[in-house]
Length: 443
Image (cartoon, rainbow, N blue to C red):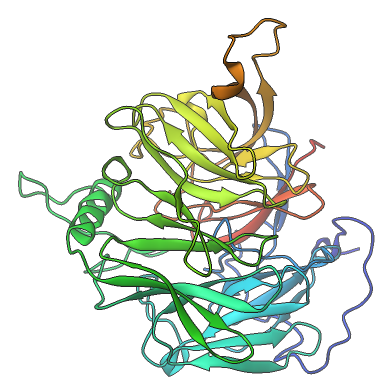
């Protein structure tokens, strides 16, 4: 059997949808990018899932998988592609000019954006003027327009496929002006007090602070998938961003107050009717930061990066939406990650590491990690008010991938596959960005 067709698991049924835009991907990756290998430092097996240079897996909290666990989508220069996880065979789902939003959690439907002019100009170009939101039948390839040229930018779909949600801003603000950096997610550009260009991360913080200070009127809105009815959920002059629907509750939204994390109360939830607004994390010290929030797959918890204070002490925090109980899992500096994720069964976490220029200033942080959570307060004796306190834990780390050649101007954005056996991520470790998977079990 050719490596191209090496099975990830049990063989799946052959794909039989002739109506798809194409039946194969033809644009080859650079010849020196391996298809599969074993990481010499960790012993874990890696696969390259994409064939086209500068293909990208989805953002870490946007669902990329069909409910049956057979298919995953990702973006490529030629359009949205889908990969059959059992065989690694690729199919072209859309032509060029479409960008994925997420996959339905219950149906074989890919929700996507069709950009005006046939392509998205850059990672900072939201393409709001003339944008279409579409639903794509992943079995037949049929594309149905849900809405076009809407007032706002859609980012998420709810658990029962009835509502879209997103944000609208009274005017746009270009976060990444100037030249883009090849094989990365863009390029922030800013000048320091000494008149010299700042590093990528320092320039990003400057630009984020400048955007926050604009106080641009914004809305979070929902859009009915069947009727097109648009409703405002909440409005503010704060910078509203990262709108996410709960994976199980069709009327619960999470969103953030964007900006430098030490200067905002970032993580919020709200009902789609505008009620129940709640700030999930209130800081207890100056320079404490929390962010890159996401739901557990049962919809019962919100998890997020927590630092007390910024850049010094590192936690993965968990907040139970029903009981309001909190667990903080501690980690070492090198184990801090740009993004974290949780397995479908809630038993494992993973992180995508970070370089020395990022907030943790980690001297050896360029790894993709698997984390085993461990509670450390089960000693038989506890404080009288223990039930009211944060429950402490620790993350026990295993290194999965050495990312020493990865440029973190592209964030890896990892996701567990539905069966928990692989972690998918994007990386420029070989130059162009590609979609990779690493096997959780060694060997």
